[in-house]
Image (cartoon, rainbow, N blue to C red; front, side, top):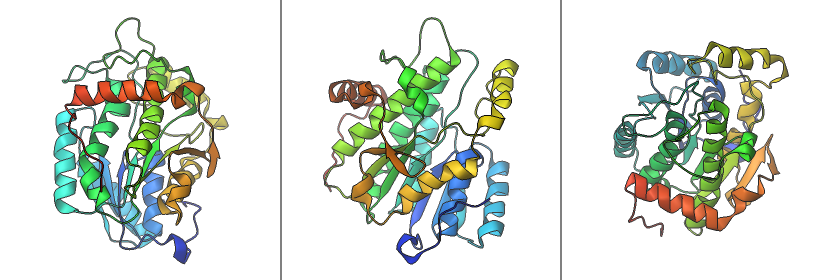
Length: 297
C-alpha cells in the first residue's frame, strides 16, 4: 500500500490534522495511509469500532506514524453526524483537511430514520452537514482543504433533487444523483468560502476496485461490480489524487476545481449551473436546518 506521493518537504503534513470519512477501506483507507506517510495526524471515521481499531493499527505499522486515531459514526444518520462533528471539533479547534469520502450503493429504496433515501443521506446530505459543522475548525486552521470524492457517473444524475427519491428506484441512478449533488455542492461551497483561505476541490477517482456495492443487499449488484474488477484501477492509485489535493502547497490553484489522476478535468455542463447549485444549496440548508451560516473569516 503506497500513496505514490513522495515525502518532499513542500508536501509535509506534519502538525496538520486530517479527517477522512469512510477511512477503513478503499479510497478512504488509502488516502489515510498517504496522509499518514506525509506526517499528518489522521482521524479516520467509520461505522465499526473494531474495524477502525484494526485500521489504525495497520496504518501505524505501515507508516510509522503513531498520530492516527478514529471516531465511529453512522453517517446515514444526521443525528450521528452532529454528534461526530461535536466530538471532533471539541478535540480539535483546528482541522486542516477534511476528506468527504464515505458513500454507498443500495439495491432497494430504503429510508433512514430522518426520512431520506439512504444513498442521498450517506453520499450527499451527510458530507454537506459534516462540512458545515466543522467549518469553524477548518476556518481556524492555516490553508485548510476540503476534498470531496465525486464520480464521473454524476453526468447521468437526476436534476430533480428529492432527498427521499420517490417513484421507481434504480440503484445506480440514485448513486449518480447523489454524486451530481456532491459535485454541485463542491462548486457552490468554493464560492461561499471565497476569501476565507479554505479551498474546496472535487475528485473523480475513476473506475476503482473498492467495496462499493458489496453491502448493497443485492447479490446481483455486488457480482456486477466484481465482474468489472479487472477493468478497475486500484484504490491505492485512486487515492493519489485526494492526497495530492490535501498536500499541495498551492491551494488557490485547486480551489473550485475537479481533479482526476492529479490533473484538472471538466464535469457536466449542468454541474456548473450556479442557479441550479443555489437551488440545491438552499433546499439542502433548509432541510438540515442550516439557515444562518456565516462564512467570513
